[in-house]
Image (tube, rainbow, N blue to C red; front, side, top):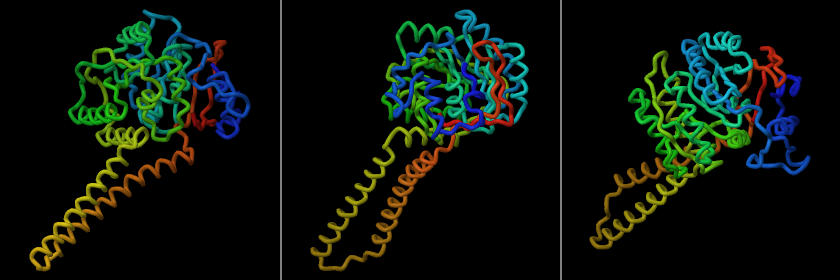
Length: 373
């Protein structure tokens, strides 16, 4: 694995001057301007390991030891060439301390990453995917609701059927009612936008080629499943178990799930703009027809129709429709503004891993890495 300290000696990744270096490290090719850029689809860089497992960690100090014990036992039934990447997403408990102690137990198999604050699950996953060196990459939650023992099933399915992405889809989800409601809204939007019947879940396995391809999408409002569906259509699901949560609370609230649905629609679809356009057309047509009706009323009876109420109603309807349209357009413009400003998806505070020679590489806390990947 590449030594980030040597690659970026000043501690901060500058996209204007060092993006070529990062692309060379990830794909083994130069960007446009130096030579022809090979697209991610043509990445032929050999994987260093058979399997990488990326796990975002947030306030999960109590489950990490059990998770890694079960995870290593399950993985070692299929391969000894693997890594587990734990990315601490600004936890408020002792998760980072626990991760560091676990590294003493699992050694080279464990990569520990600490982010400078909480960036959200999907940005954290992008960080982990950027670190992954395996031919296949698994992502899963840290709460043990996704049994690690199901990983061999996912690995066998993606190999046997020549797929790029396989989701572990539980037949029954052990979540609270509000969590299921929010998840159902996100999944409905996902199917509407991508016309894909597979239900996306945090428990997934993908090929290295796909995992590295999504890193080329530099979005501040990241929705990983949307990026994956945009890159490939070879997606399937396999039924897995889903266990009740034993410790802690979910990091997702209903508002966060609705925000995720908004990210999906605004990043990958023009449907909100199309809905507003349709609403404007319907409103204008209705106003035109109402105007014709009142005109006929006036011509037929020669009586002036009192129009105060109808005028106020029309103004309110049209004004509301215009404000709604401006709000949707403003949402798109705001996201465009933030993406143009290139706010980093995440910033690494601390990286603890071993390089390809087995030598410890630990980035000190004083050298954070601002990463636009």
